[in-house]
Image (tube, rainbow, N blue to C red):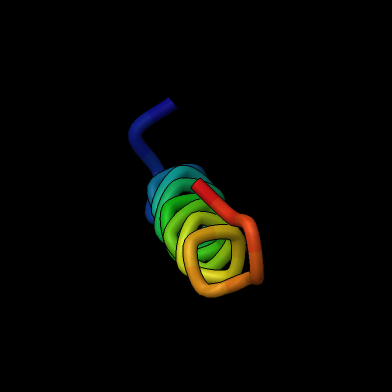
Amino acid sequence: MTSPGNDDGAVGYRVPALARGLAILGAVAAAPGGA
């Protein structure tokens, strides 16, 4: 469970997920009438 493949999988999932979350929040805030 500690193989590099599994570690890459965790990082590869969490980092893009955070990036997408920030991008979505930015888009909502920049949109007219956004929060």
